[in-house]
Image (cartoon, rainbow, N blue to C red):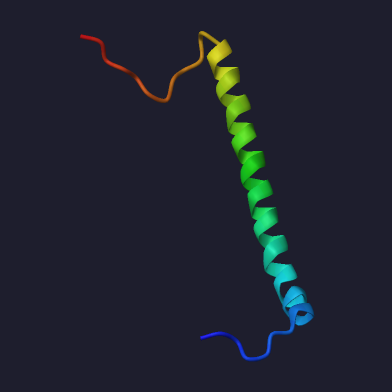
Length: 58
């Protein structure tokens, strides 16, 4: 079933808020991701840093 009366201008106004929210969430996730990459690179350059995971060698 399709909508009988579609008002594109009205729909654009109604969807601006959710689209801005989605864009803000994606931006926040990108900032966290790049922060994680920087933190990981910093720990990789530090040979004395403690690792959160210990691998047991036999």
